[in-house]
Structures are given as structure tokens and as C-alpha cells.
Length: 437
Image 1 (tube, rainbow, N blue to C red):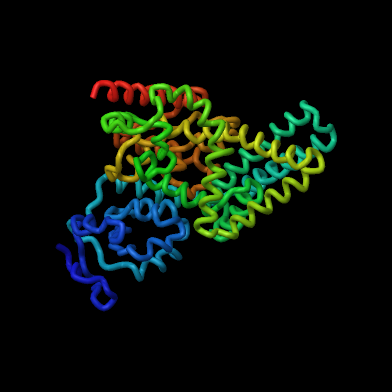
Image 2: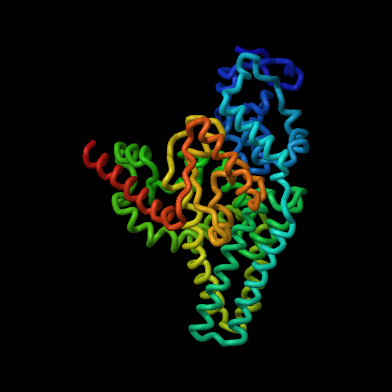
């Protein structure tokens, strides 16, 4: 038992106290959370609710070494450490501070990337990206204004606006990860405008959800992107567990089929709208709600005179329906076919590689996916500007080869097909276990 275990008040804590990993792991409950960052031991039990990234993302590392996640998510570590300092209660003991070779190598690669200047954004790249989004927004309206609202101009405008919305989604993703500007507050300001003013969504909701996914990708009960067990079962272990417990109500052996009916068509138009509104209202994020109101005022102001109120609403939902297909296929191709498991506390490199794969780079693939075809590099270095992923990729590959980790790269269509194949395989595992247990 490490020193200082008998009390945690400011008068009782000795910052020279040392703790073993057994000591740290004892503090991983809902009300008692310790984390380790760069060998310092921090009691975040009370502060966790004030964490800007949400209490869950920090809670997912309770009792663990959160160093690599901390470094990956915070570009301005000097500023953040000021908030950490009052929470430190001691350090890991020397015998508990030894790092494995794979951890040391991954951290060395991070340092190398910083020395190569790969975390410095090119303003011209992002300015051009935003300009083409805004140009598409204007062009979509002009098509209907100039050519009328017949089927041909209507479908053309919908396609243009869908493209704008999809590209806005990739851009807000960059901003949410603080990779566009060197100053975090500038990223936050523009993020609110893009995701709220251009997409009618909540920045707070996105951060709350998305950083959990990055912290523990494909980890059951910790990654919200795979928390849909009543509709879909993923991986090889979850289906068997649910079958043995006779849980669920869907015919999961057909999930590769009904995925086309309730997956891509409904995620953005139904599920995300509902979750967004619920999040904003229950957590009282009134700024985000104001941005959403701004979006719809703008939308109906421009499209109401052309299409009428119901027509403008119909165009909006049609665009969301089309965008939802684009979003689902791109965001799920890198993760659904990969390993889905309970948390085994893998090191950062192994955690991301087991849950993530890449798609071949090309000018089209990079644009179409918002550079999420470099999903491995993005997950390892989420604050890295996406235009630098190709530069760090060869170094990541070399590190994976050294440690025997699979670095998967697929074709775009092959990655799409693997979504269906993995759903079919998981569904069959459920069916076999359900009827033979």
C-alpha cells in the first residue's frame, strides 16, 4: 500500500508520496478516480465533472495510465498542466514507472512528429476547404433560384448541398480536434460556427461523444459508436455474449440486410437529431441551441420563398438523408470490421491498431473521406492537421512492423464491403450461439 492512502485532504497529502499500480487500480469507481499522467498520480474524483471533454472520457481511464491519451488530445499541454497540478497526490513508485518498449517507441514517434513540424497547420489548406464549402452552399441556393424548383434543379441542388454538408462535417471534425489553428480558442470559436451555424448540431454534444470514441475505440460500454446492441451486434465476442444471455430482440443474423434500412438512411435524420436535442436541453447548452436556431432561420429565410415552409423542411431532411449515407459508410468502414472487445487496457499504439484500419490514399479518397482514410494516423495523433497524415504514415508502418502489429490498408469499395461482411459474420455468430446454448 502506497503512502498517503489514509486521507486525501490538502493538509494530509504529501506530494512526495509514491504509489504502486495496485494502489492506483484500486481507485477506479464512480466516486473515486485516480489516473496516471507522465508518472504523476492524480485524484480526479471531484474534478472529473468539470473536465471540458466530458466526465466519461476521463472516467474511462480511471485506475490507468492516461499519459498517451492526455498527450494526444491536448495540443497546449503547458496550459492544461496548470489545471492538473492541484490534483496531483504523488508519483508512481520507481518499480512501477518502467515502460514497455512499445510504449517508449510510440512516445518517441510522437516526439519525432513534433520535431518534423507535423502538428503545424497550413492555413491555406483549411482556408481553401472552408471556401469550397461556402461556395457550395451559395451554389445550391442559386440553382433553385435561377432554374426553378423542378425535379432536375431540385435534385442537383440537393446533391450540391449534400456535398457541402458532408465536407462541413469533415471540417468541423478538424476543428473539434483542435488541428486547424495553433490557438485552441480559435478552433472552438470556428467549430461552433461550422457545426452549429452550417450543420445545426451541437459542438458540446460532438465533443462529449467523439472523444470517448477516440479514447477507447471499439471498447464495449466505452465507445458510443458501437453502443447499439439492441439494433446491431459487432465483433466476435459481443454477439456470443448476448446470445448466451438471450438478450436483444432483433434477428441479428439478418443485420447485414436491415443495416441498409435503418443504418445509413436514419442515423443523421432521426437518431442524431434526437440525441443532439436531448443533449443540448438536458445539459442546458444554450449557446449550441442558439447556433441551431440560427441555422434554421437562415435555411428557411433562403429556401422558404422558393419552396414554401414544408418544401424547405423537406429539402433539409432530404439533404440529411443523403448525407447520412455518406457519413455512415465513411465513418464505419475503418472500425466496424475491426476488433470489438471489452477493455483490456492495451497500450496506445495497440489499442488504436486493433480497432482501426486505413483506406488507400488518392486525391478523391482524401477529399471524399475528409482524410479519414488515414484513420490509423488520425487516431494515433488526433490533433495533427490532416494534410500531414501522409508524411507520418511511413513511420507508423515501420513501428507496426517492428512490433508485429497489423497495419491494414484497403480499397475504398473493399472497406465498404467489409462493413457488410463483418455484420454478416457477427450476426451468424449470434445465431449459432443463440440456438446452440
